[in-house]
Image (tube, protein in one colour):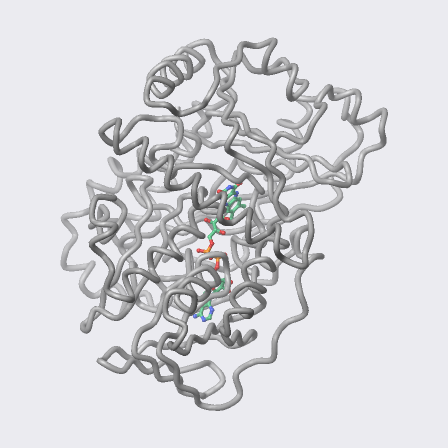
Length: 466
Ligand SMILES: Cc1cc2nc3c(=O)[nH]c(=O)nc-3n(C[C@H](O)[C@H](O)[C@H](O)COP(=O)(O)OP(=O)(O)OC[C@H]3O[C@@H](n4cnc5c(N)ncnc54)[C@H](O)[C@@H]3O)c2cc1C
């Protein structure tokens, strides 16, 4: 009953291929990786700040962060806050928020993907992880409240909605167990769910009062502004082509410059394999979002969705919906294709908008004829066990990273930026108990087995969800 557990079965299919060790060893040479940074076509993009100038000369810093999404900006902000004497540079291939941070489904959720509405770790640890992520969310809200960009975060609460009686039963069980731990979620039956989001398509839902809705790109701007206020230098339209490890790391930029650093942060999400890291840990999969035009008052009233509380369902190929401040409805999810060899080039799934429209009309039949004003896609960084990872690696243990959010990173990235800052300053003991810190993630086989396994799983889930 997790929010996004469609990929889990890939572990089984892909596992068959793990014996192909010989092919794996030579795969990067056989299938070279190419960086590609597609333009962001999301609605949120309209709020992007003007790009900072690119890096045009060689440079040097204590820490260089690669990628200006939520993770990179948060890591840069927290490193400077913790160690104000360190020089910190961020280099971003396009503009801040060009990746998933500027394209997502806008749900601000506590917890991590593998534990979201499940009880995976020992219950007490589950509660500590929940509390930690909620505390981080409150810190992020405080930052947003101080920023010059209004309305980045709306503390609405959120629902996970259950289509079947069986999954509703699991939801009820989850609520009973977690309320005993002091987690303030509530179980809502069909009527209670419909009272909040209008549709009666769901048997039940779980309400989490700590969740919320964001304007994704405004949130990027909040963290970018905070990082710059702490003295971080951010260069946009500046992409890293190669990382040369050592006690002093050298980054070779696509523009020909060299950047030297004592430590680097890989905040490159689904693009990370292109720099030679986590090739066998992260599978980038596409997800689609579409949005209506601003609806009229009567159109909105016809949906019965009175407030702006976002929700997602509990299917394998999850759908997630929200309402913007100007009265649009956005819906994301459905097909989640994977591109050969960790492909990160824009793919257009001709069916995606049709599937999203079918789902929107199933939930809100009164919107027939409204259609979508625009649609876009973005990449989600999946791990086989749906758990994220944050830590350090490299020959000199000076390559820090936070990734594998599995479509659950809008909130978690801010926390991982803080953890990266602590790890970089030598403070790993504070985080030792958390299972996502410096963990070994399950292994993804190389091509062609990866493509075959993920594709087969995706098709299977598409079939069973229907
Ligand atoms: C369609 C979609 C819907 C989602 N919905 C939700 C949701 O509702 N709730 C939720 O919690 N999560 C959601 N997510 C996940 C969430 O958006 C991500 O987990 C989060 O944004 C990850 O942030 P990031 O900074 O790690 O990565 P990104 O935002 O992807 O940033 C990585 C950055 O690195 C840059 N980069 C990459 N390689 C290089 C290089 N070589 N040199 C320089 N720069 C480089 C990229 O240009 C990019 O800007 C969704 C994701 C998608 C795609």
